[in-house]
Structure formats: structure tokens, C-alpha cells
Length: 99
Ligand SMILES: [Zn+2]
Ligand SMILES: [Zn+2]
Image 1 (cartoon, protein in one colour):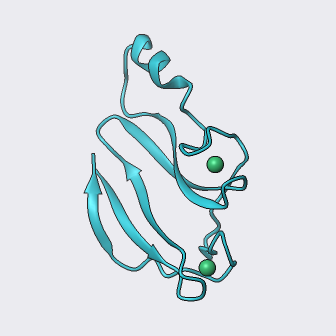
Image 2 (cartoon, rainbow, N blue to C red):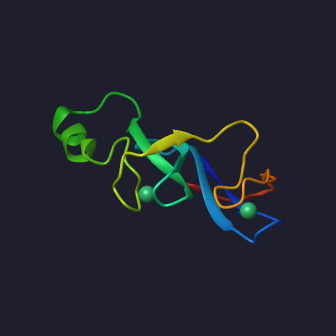
């Protein structure tokens, strides 16, 4: 089960729910979409061994921004910079779980 963080940039007020980890079916990786200037959870694959039909069904979503479907993604650095203003964001607390 993955967890959800509520991100809150103290500097510019940017807020985002961050889906981290892997759910029942998909593995998501936290990335920055440089087109949207948003932190997004990008599906990178399916958990476990899955039938090819299912993989096929999801394949077009892999490694794409879930908002704009673009591929201009980069890893969110360890310092957790805000995609809007660059200030480090405190991960804060876990607000929920996703599956
Ligand atoms: Zn900010
Ligand atoms: Zn995007």
C-alpha cells in the first residue's frame, strides 16, 4: 500500500497531495513535470507479474505525466524543492493511503 503526503510550501503556498510508494496494481514514482511545474506521481510499472494484456492496457500511462500526458519529467531531488518557487518543502505528515 502506498502513502499520501500532504505537501505544503510555506514560501509560496503551493499545495499538492503526494502519492508515494506502490499500490495494489501500480508502482508510482514521484517526479516533477517540467511542463506543468507540478509534483506528480508517475506510474512506472505494475506490481508483481501481470498478464501481458493488462500491462498493455496500462503501458501508455507509464512514464508519463498523469496531468498532461507529457514526458518532460525529472526526478524530484532529495532536497524536495517546490516546483513553483524552489524552496525546500517539508514532507509533513502522512494523510492517507492509496491502493
Ligand atoms: Zn513554493
Ligand atoms: Zn505535466
